Image 1: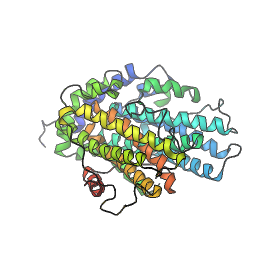
Image 2 (image 1 turned 30 degrees about the vertical axis):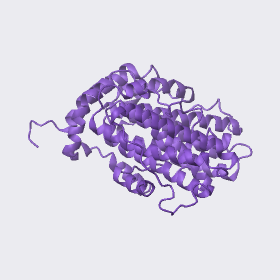
Image 3 (image 1 turned 90 degrees about the vertical axis):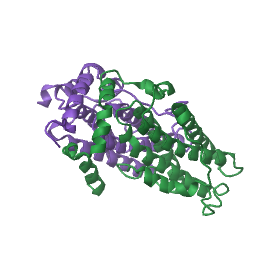
Image 4 (image 1 turned 180 degrees about the vertical axis):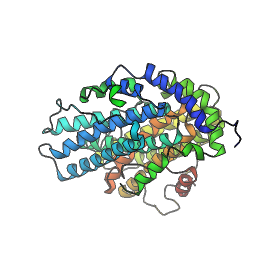
Amino acid sequence: MTDFTPTRRHVLKWTGVAATLAVAGSVLPNFGISAALAADLGSGDIGVLNYAYALEQLEAAFYTQVIKTPYKGITKGERKMLTAIRDHEVTHRDTLKKALGKKAIPGLEVDFSSIDFTSRASVLGTADVFENLGVAAYNGAGQLIKEVAYLAVAGSIVSVEARHAAVIAEMLHGAGKEAAGGGNVDMKGLDGALSPAEVLPKAAPFIKTPVTANALV
Amino acid sequence: MNIQDNFILDEIDPDLGERIDAGRRNLFARYAAPAIALGSAPLLLAAASTEAFAAGALPQKVVDVLNFALTLEYLEAAFYKMGNEANGLIPSEYRALFHTIGGHETAHVALLKSALGAAAVKAPAVDFTAGGKYADVFSNFKTFATLSATFEDLGVAAYKGQAGNLAGTAVLTTALQIHSVEARHASAVRPLIGKAGYISAFDKPKTKAQVLAAAKPFLA
C-alpha cells in the first residue's frame, strides 16, 4: 500500500465522525446513558456497542435475580431454560465489556422495584418485554454500525435474543402463534426495529444509575 | 469462556481494519457515502417497507444477496404450504404455530420479490423428501418438525452470513428484521423435536456456499 492510499482505518475515522455526531445529536434522547455515550465516544461504533452493553447489563441483572429468587411454582424445565438464558445474557454482557475495554460505560445499577419476582406472570411478562425490546434494538442499531466485524458480533447476538423471545412466549402462551413471533412480527413478516431514541426511554425505568459524562472520564 | 467466545473476540480485534482485504476495502468505499447519510438522519425505519427496499437501483451485490435469500424463502414457503395442507400431519395444538410460520415465509417471499422486481429469481423446483431420504416428511410429524427446525436454523445462519454484504445499505435493516423472525421460528420449533430453542450464547453465520450445500438435497 502506498502512502497516499487511504487505509480503511482512515475511512472509518471519517465516517465515524458523522456517526458520532448523529448518535450524540439526534438519534439518542436526553437520557443518562445517552449523555454518557455522547460524551466519550471514540467512534460511532463504540457508542453503539455501549448501547448494546447497557441493554445486556439490564438483561443479565434481571435473569440473575430471577434465578436467585425463583418465582412461585417454577418448574424444573422453566428453571433450566431461564438459567440458560441468564448465562447467555451474562456472556453477552461480558463479551461486550471486554470488547469495549476502557471505553465501556460503568456497571449500571438497576431498578427492578416494579417487578414482582415471586410472580410467574410478572417475571415472564418482564422477560417478554426485555427480549422483544432487545431484538428491536439490535435490529435498529445494525445500520448505525460501520465496522463489519462489529456488525457480525451484533448479528450473532440478536438471533439469540429472538430465540429467547420465542422461549419466553412459549412459556407464556404455549407453542402457538406467539412463539412464532405473532404480536411482534408485522404483516410483511418483519420483526421490530427501533432506534436508540425509541428503545432507551423504554429501558430507562429499569436503570437507576445516573450515568454522566464525567463518570466515563 | 469457551472457544466460541474467543472466536467472537477475535472477530472484533481492533487491528482488523489493517488486515482487511482489497475486496472488502472497495466494498466499504462504495458504501461509505450512503453510510454517512444514514447515520446523520433518524433511523430509516421506512426501510421496513418495500418502497424503501426498492428505492433506486440496487447494487448487483445486494441483488445477489436478496436473490439468495429469496431462494431460501421460496423453499421455506413451499415447505410450510405443503405441510399445512397435508391432512393429519400437524397435531391440532401446533397448527397455529405452523400456520403463523408459513404466513411469515410467504410474506418474506412477497417482500423480496417486490424489492427485486424483474431481477427476482424464479421459485426453484423442490423435493422435500431429498430423494427419498425423508419419504414421510408430510405424513410423519416428527420428520416434518425436524426439517422445519433444520430450515429455520439454516435461514438464521444464512441471513447472518450476508449481513456484512449489506452493511451501509438501507436493505440491511430489513434483512435483520427477517433474520430475527427466522430465529423465533427456529426456537419455537426445536422444542418439538426435543431440543432447546437456543444453541448457545452466540449463533454462528454460514457462508452462501455452506447454505447452498445444505439446501441442495431439497432442490430438485
